Length: 87
Image 1 (cartoon, rainbow, N blue to C red):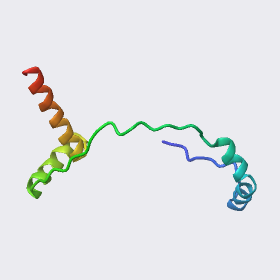
Image 2: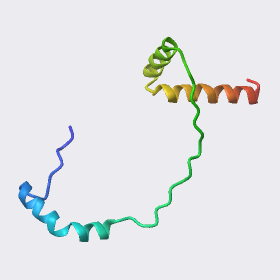
Image 3: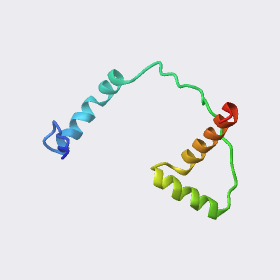
Image 4: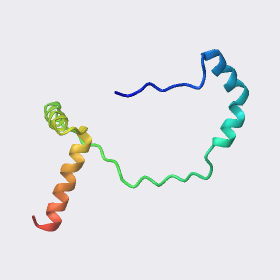
């Protein structure tokens, strides 16, 4: 069983006063700088599916513990791999 997080503050008033006094200094010291984000490494496409087909995909994805888009992507990648390896 997880233990609840303990606060160093004994009540909300004391915590509020602390942050009112120390927020700016804490933010400046803790602020990350020079963060670079990778470019989007994949492209997006839209696919139209009949509602019945989408429902079946959602059901199959749920069984596997995946989202429907994850499952569809997995299927596409498997097919692409098969066509390139001749399996």
